[in-house]
Length: 424
Image 1 (tube, one colour):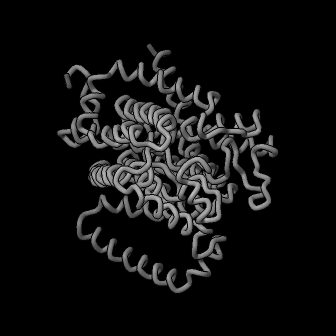
Image 2 (image 1 turned 135 degrees about the vertical axis):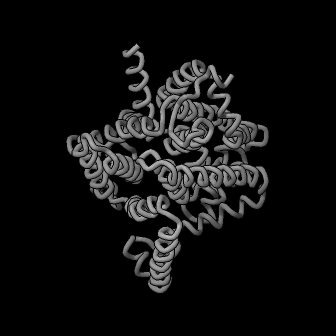
Image 3 (image 1 turned 90 degrees about the horizontal axis):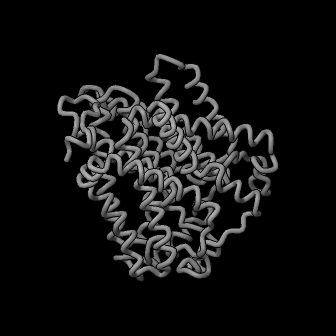
């Protein structure tokens, strides 16, 4: 039995590591030169994910009653995935929608299994193992094999990318890693030196990636962390604190508006966010041609073969996505998908806030931090409702986990007394 439990934990850690985008894509890039056809997919990359889905399905079957019980309570996630799958009937690229819709279903299944199998505390610990392995291997890979672990393009020369295909991906993952280790270090009484070492290494890799977006994201979340902890205070203290925060952020906002050119210049950007506003305008032009249902899941950004061809011409830039996940979701699944996603986000946030006020530990804050990280990342990179994506895995996991907490904790304690037998 212990060996089976150990195997299951190893499987979860490896799966989480692969969902972050580590190792598999860059090994494929190194061995093949990176040739990849967006329309046909690639079996070398698909096989590891298919193995993850298959094992998750088997493990989910063993606790199917519990999974069905909580999926019924979280119908919005089911509806979102269902809309993505059904969009094959109006998709501009039905085969791609079908293939990636299946991958989305497998990714969602893993997130549901992860939530129903492990407590929030256990999820944090397993995620720390996965991200810790990503951080250590990225550092070793970059130092030992700089030809692959460090980027050499003229505009990003010297930036670490580690075991990822781009510096920005390394930056995003190390932001998540920093927060996970920080939450655990702040609430742990054992092995704290290892946890703080994880914080330091992860933060250092954010800097070494030279990803300005990741750095801004990390700074934002480090500012938000004490604000979220303040939710646990009594009402009067919290009100005074929030007023002070509003004054500070109002002052910062005023300074930004007054000196935005200098701020953008310091970040290596311009007022168009390096041309992104032109991309957004062009994407919106196409969205208004099919605003209600969109063009089908994963059927918009197909290079010259999709509606993205117009965006390329209008923006004079060959973008692979709109650099705004909400725009991408609108383009793919229309207002129907976008509105369902907004409802899901609002519900999850309210539950996460309530949980943060009730549980005075790291796992109590994790859903709120995780949702904020995913939301902020989604404003520049598509993370919501994305197949084979760690952010979607964690979104599903924390959403289901908060539902489990509300359903099973009548005494306001985190518990796992609910079993498949007593939810039948």
